[in-house]
Length: 208
Ligand SMILES: NC(=O)c1ccc[n+]([C@@H]2O[C@H](COP(=O)([O-])OP(=O)(O)OC[C@H]3O[C@@H](n4cnc5c(N)ncnc54)[C@H](OP(=O)(O)O)[C@@H]3O)[C@@H](O)[C@H]2O)c1
Image (cartoon, rainbow, N blue to C red; front, side, top):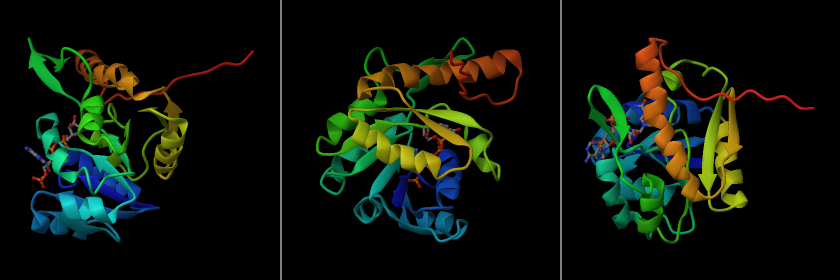
């Protein structure tokens, strides 16, 4: 797949782009194309572009930009029409030394879907610290994916499985992004309060 990572010059964007580049053709998207090219040089086979060029070139687009920058997606609506768009964006704020979810209602992924009405928006990777992706091989983990349809989930699932040791789990329609994004401050606070080092999600199962 040809995958664009918008915000691919940032901490999460660089880390996930490097992992995705094992089995996908990666385009790094930045507001500054020269910064994008610089980041791309460090990733095997990757190229760099501005957001529009990266969006036009890709089949699937991953957003790893700050929540405050999400509005820029409106200008990409035509380029992203019909495409699968994955949001890893978390609206967060700090209060009394702990991270809190930043929205009163809804979710960043649903807001993104509101800006990209012709795209197939999903949420994924929200509570995986970039530290996991900065390792050569990530540890085994579950990636919770919310998407309006199973078909969109299957595309995202393919992307998730292109990274070793990751198991995609379908969480239901995009409204479930409200639950998934709100887990991010919980996971980060658990790590901080219990001094565990970075945590992420992995569910255990039993059949019988
Ligand atoms: N870091 C993590 O471990 C992690 C894990 C999971 C999810 N996320 C999510 O991923 C997103 C990015 O987090 P990050 O830690 O990677 O942040 P970061 O290091 O600050 O990178 C964000 C990137 O977004 C781009 N950007 C576009 N508009 C921007 C604006 N108005 N202000 C600042 N940057 C802007 C910047 O690239 P250009 O300047 O090149 O355009 C920048 O490199 C957040 O929504 C976060 O919740 C992060």
